[in-house]
Length: 69
Image (cartoon, rainbow, N blue to C red):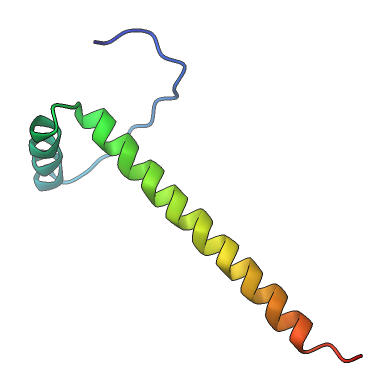
C-alpha cells in the first residue's frame, strides 16, 4: 500500500458525515476511501459523457429535422 502511481492527486473538502460514510463503505468493501471516491468520480464522468452524447445527438436530430430540402 502507498506505492508509486501514475495517477494524479485531487484534494477535496467534504462534510464529516460524508467522510464517515465513505470510510464505512470502503471498510465494508475492503477498499481504501481513495479507491471508492475514484470509482464514484469515474462513474459520474461516464454518466456525464453519456448525457453529453445524448444531448449532441438530440441537437443534431432536431437541427436536421428543421432543414428543408
